[in-house]
Length: 432
Image (cartoon, rainbow, N blue to C red; front, side, top):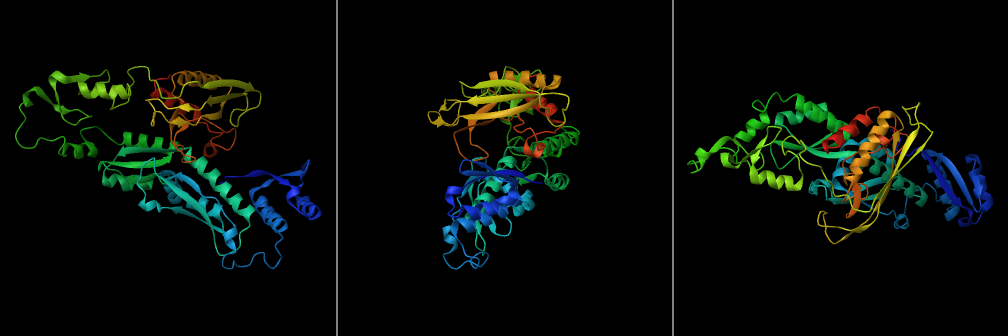
């Protein structure tokens, strides 16, 4: 799988003392001259070779210098700027995308993380610093920067499609699921009856479907058997004085027996302590057990944004008979409110472009996305999974196609299941 295919490079001849030699190098790449600059469009491999040739011209390295082993201090001048990224995403890349990572770094560079990922606490806010370190041969600066940009592009494309969730499994199921879903990364969680799973959205969805289909009933589930034997849900020592007023079932939130006088049962037939349910609904008006919606869900998308829609006649791959709907989102920068992670601090806004087919189903999805935007559900404020920076406007669990081509791995088309997937994501938020 290629992460950067065709690249356009802009080369300013003012940076080179020998324009004739520069033009001789560029001739075989069919450059387009604009002012003092040459535009060269080529594959990643061609640009990689070109960067080596250009570095030799620009820095006047002699033929004897090129390709030889670095002497002490010689490589120090090749400074490759580090990148701060999400520890969760980088752990997934290192363990599940090792082949792609090796292809990016090649034989001349090695990708290192600091601190070591094995010592980093596994949560969404943890970050690590990624550094590209030259191996034992000389690295031309242009080539090093090209590898760095290639890594950043791959990281961004991977991060924007990753989802982190928890699933209820026993220790035996854990190993079985690892074999069945090789694209997912499984890690133990604080709850011994659950594991934390990281992976692409489509594989997470398949995992959840598989777990649901293979859980015959709550009474037979090994997860529930384990929970029934934990101190929080079983009776220890003398019975409390209110035991006669309590039913056998426990509140799924506080894990204590539900008092008959405090019992609240929802339309979906799930029951809770009244106070527990009130606190849960203050956070989000959905059933804590099954996710059924009980009110209009309003998100934390910052105010003042715009959702502009235009159309053109070009077709998306897989939708050859239809034009394209172009959605342009804009959320301005501002100050965080109480509903955001850091009230009073500024947040950085964002501009995003997304694409839908101009088919009947695509237009239906567009209407649903408009409702979701009006209910402030499309974006939120948090830490960017692509840059690792905090206090940023980010996507909020409703996946968009931000590219017209490249398929699911590049967040583009063709992707025959995308419209049904995004419809399901909207349905979960009460948009249908």
